[in-house]
Amino acid sequence: METILKHKLSVFTLVVTIISAAVVFIILKFKRRIRKASEAFQYMNISIVTDEEACNNAVLILRRKCAHQNAIGFDCEWVTVGGKKQPVALLQLSTLDGFCGLFRLNQMKTVPSSLKALLEDNNIYKVGVAPTDDAKYLFLDWGVKLKSSLDVRHLARECGYSAGGLATLSEALLQVTLDKHWKVRCSDWEAEKLTERQVVYAAADAHVAIKIFAKLIREYTGRARGSLWLAGNPDTDSQAANDLCRDIADIAFKLKHNHNQKSNGRKDKTMKKEDVVISKRYPHATRTKPLYNNCYLQAPDGELLCTCDKKKALWYVDKGLATVESEAPLTVRLRFEPAGRSVGQVGRYYQLAKENKCVVCGSTHSYIRKNVVPREYRKFFPEVMKDHSSHDVVLLCARCHQLSNTLDLRMRETLARKCHAPLSSGKNYSAEDFNTKKMRAVARALLYQSRSLPEARRRALEAQLLQHYPQCEQITQQLLEEAAATAPEVVMKTEEECHGLKVVEYHLKHEGLLRLEESWREHFLTTMEPKYMPELWSIKHNEERLRIKLDEGRLSQKDLQSIGVTSLT
Image 1 (cartoon, rainbow, N blue to C red):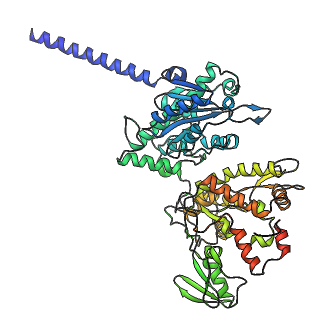
Image 2 (tube, one colour):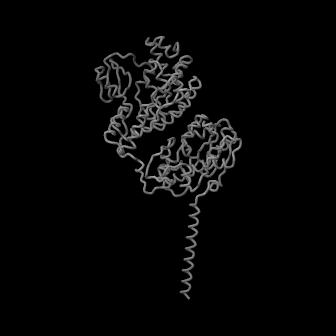
Image 3 (cartoon, rainbow, N blue to C red):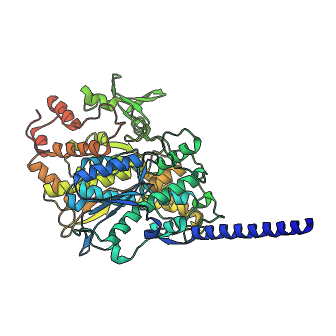
C-alpha cells in the first residue's frame, strides 16, 4: 500500500512538473512573440493638442509623469511638397507609463510658452532616434532650442547592440513591430483631422523611444527590474546612468561600420567594448596641450601689454625684437615702442589670462576655436576692424561647437532676408570651410584606419594635422577625436554673388559694420547662454577699442567711412 502511494505521489509530482514547465514555456513564448504596436500599446492614453489651453494641461501631465525618469519619448512629423520640406506639423512626446501628447503645431500656429519651456529644459532628456535632426528643424521652423536631446542608438551601442533604426530596435528589444508603411509615414500630417492610423503611428514612435531608453538604462546599470530613477537617487548605478546620459546628450549619432555587430539588432555576446575602437594606435593618450599658454608681453618700460601664446612670444625673441624677462610664466619685453598700449577695460581684456575650457559648459577635456563673428562676413571687413580679432574667438567643446554652428543657421537666414542676400539662389552654393573639412578627414583616417595605412602615408597625415594645430606637439587620441568631431562652419560661395559680401555691403550703407558684429555677439550670448565667458568680454568691444584709437589720433575719417559710420559717440 505504501509503495502504491509513493508511486502515485511520484506520478503526481511528475505531472505537476510537466504542467508547470508547459505553463512557463507558454508564458515565455507569449512574452517573446512579436506583437504589433497597436496591440502592445493598447494601454496608451493619447491626447491630441490643438490649442494653448490643451497644450498647458498636457505639458503639466508630461512633467508630472516623467518626474522619476527625467526623460520623455520624442519625435516629429512634417509634410514634404514637391521635394521641399514644410515646417514641422506634429510634435510627439510620451512618458514611460503611456501618456502621449500629440501637439499639432500647424494648427496652433505657434509653440506655447509651456511647451517651449519643456523642450528647452536641460533637466529632461528628449529621447528618440536622430533627435538632433528634429531639433534642427524645430529651431529653424519654430525658433525652439531643443535641449538634452538623446539618441537611443548611443545607449544601444553602449550596451552591445547594433544601432539600427527605431523599428529595428523596437523589434529586437521590445518584441514590438512598428507600422512603417510609406503610406502612413508620408501621409498628410497637416490634415484637418488625423486618421486613427496616423495617431497610433505617431504615438507609438514616441512611446517606443522611451521604452527602449528605459530598458537600455536598466541593462546598463545592471538592474533586471524596477523603475528607472535618474534623479534624486544617490546610488552608484543611477549616478553612472546620469553621467552617461549627460555625455551623449545633444550629440548626433554617427554610424560606425563594425563587423562584430550583427545586423538584426540583437546583442552579440562575443563583442567586447574595445572592439568599437577601430584604431588602436592612440589608446589612453594624454590630453592635448592647452590652447592658451598665457605668456606675457611687456612694453619697453615693463608695462604689461597683453597675454599671448608661447610661439608668438618666442618669435619676438628669435627676431631680436624682445628679451626674456622671466621663464615661469614666460614673460618677454619688447625692444621697440608698440603702436598702442592697453587703455581702459578694452586694454585690460587683453591683459587677462584666458582659461582653457568651454565657455558654455565649462568642459576642460576638449576645446575647439569658435568664431563668434563668422569668417564669411569678417573676411570682407576693412583692416581697421580685423585687428585684435581674438576677442571674438572663444573655446567650445565638440558638442557645444556643433550645436552653436547649427543655431547659427537661424541668424544667417535672418540676415539673408534683411539684407536681400539669399543663402542659395542663382549660382550661390554652400560649402564647408575647406581647411577644417580637410583636417577633419585626415583625423578620421588616423582615428579609424590607422592600422591599414602605409607607414609613410600615416606619417604624412600626422604631419598635416600637427601643422594645422601648431599648439599641439604630438598626435594624441584627444586631438584626433576633437579634430574628427569638428563641424566646419558653412560658408556661402559663388561665382558672381556672395551672401557674406552682400550682408557686409548692406550694413556699410545702412547700420555700419559695428552693428553687424554686435548682432552676432548678441546671437551667441542668447542662443548658447555661455556661463564661462572671459572677464570683460563685451558686445561693444570693437566700438570701444576704435574710440580709444580715435581719441589718440590713430584713426582717420577715412577709416570711419570704411566701417560705415561718420562718428563714434
